[in-house]
Image 1 (spheres, one colour):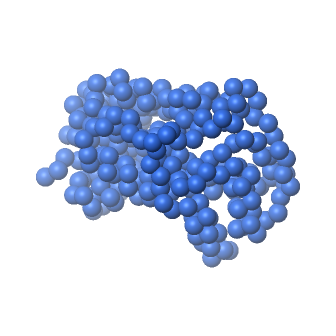
Image 2 (cartoon, rainbow, N blue to C red; image 1 turned 180 degrees about the vertical axis):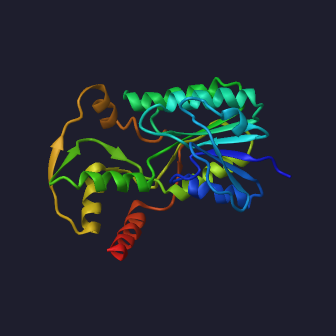
Length: 259
């Protein structure tokens, strides 16, 4: 019988796609969260706290591979360090980690925490794989929804994104998780690059909204990095196939059905 794979963030946007893929490959899956959930069809839930490191030992018992998807606005470096150390103590054979494109090039605190999380994986002593992915469609959609709640929408000049489909990120992560440790693999981004203004225009059209816009300048080193495209995928990247336009059309249709 295959050893269980531990997935952190297994109920999140990407995790909801990854877990069924790992199960279809014949692996039992443990989903780690702060509160345990209901088991079902080869999936069990274990409770542990990544930020404090509490209860990680039992969660990792008997696990051969860990897929680390859990993340947030703060504390990713600390949480990943706790997980990496615990994985080493447990004798885990492969630690797979998702990071963000530009992790080593954008001088913002939350981006630096992503890079520090990568370093925790690399320095863990556990054979590892790291995939840097662009922002998934769902996250960009949520961001635009929040922006357009304001009567006047700030539009950062020079900011470009490469939205990628969550299911395609999940498929790549499943492939990496089931394979041998591969180190830092090529970045994964969507097939097209958009300025934030273009994304906003498409969203407003699909949602049937009108908003005034206020161009804003991102100051300092971070602004310069974004204008230079430091947040975009590195040369040699892998590109997804599902476009932002296709995702947006489906999301808008589903939103109208709910209304």
